[in-house]
Image (cartoon, rainbow, N blue to C red; front, top):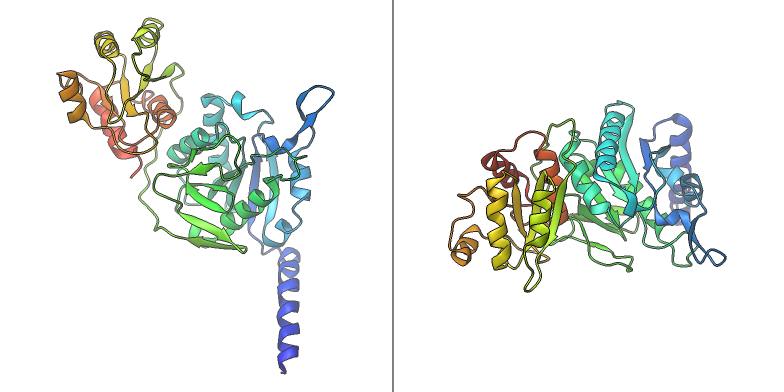
Length: 353
C-alpha cells in the first residue's frame, strides 16, 4: 500500500469507526444531568439583565462531535441559577446520580452546573457517591449568547473524560477550560475568567487536542453513608477587629453547627475566642479552618495564641479544607454524630490530602 493510500485509509478509519460504533451500539452510554447553567442564558436589553433562552438540548446540538464519542442520554434535574442551589438540592442530586450509576448500561455521568456553587456540589457528590464510574461536573463562565461562550468546549471535554478508562475510581472530577480537577479540591478562583477553577495541589489531568492526559495517580477515597443532612450550619469569616456577634447569634439561633474561617493557621479575634465558650457550653460543634487560599490550620499554634487547648475543649479543626467545603462536610457528618471527637475523626479522614 502506497503512502497516499495509507493516508487515505487512516482518514477513512477516523471518520467511519465512530459512525459504525453508533450503529453497532458499542459506544459508552453517558447520562447528562442538567442542573442549570449560565450557558442557558442571554442578556436581554429589554429586561436589562440575564434571561433564560436556551436548554440543555440546544447545548448538546451545538456540539455535534459529542455524538461521535458517546451515546448521551439527557435528564433535567433543575434549571436554576447556581446561586439558588441549596445543600438539600445538592444532596438530592447526589442521590439521583448514584441511582443512575447503578444501571449497568450507564458508563458514567456528566453534570452541567452553574459555576457559583459548583465547588460545593462537586465536594458533596464526592463524599456521597460510592461508585467507581466517572462522575464529571462542568459548566460555563459565559452566557450562551456570548461570542466567547465556553459551555460547548467544556461539555465536549467532559464527555471525553467521562468515557476514558483512566477516569474510573477517581471520584468526582471537575472539568473546566481543558483542565481536570479533583472534586474534593476544586475551588472557584475567578468570578469572570474562563479558567475559573483551581486546586492548591494542581490539576489531576488535562484534556489536550482531544486526548485525556492524567498527571496524578488515583488517590484513596472515603464515602459518608447518610440519608440526610443538617440544615442550619453557618459559615463565619474572620476579619481584622471583628467581634463575636455573628457567632453568638448563630449559637443563640439554634445552629446545628458553625464553621469559622480563621486567620492564617486558624487564629481568631479575642471576642470570637470568648464566644466559643458559649458554643462549647451549648454543645454546638464548631469547626475552624483557614481563610487563606491554601495551607493547614494548626491546633498547637492556635492553642498558644488562645492560651488554651481548644481541641481539648471540643473545637474541631478542618485541616486544609476551605470554609464552604468544611461546611458541606459538617452538614453530612452531623447526621451521624454530634460528638466532637468523632466529628474530628471524620475531618481527619476527609480533608484534602
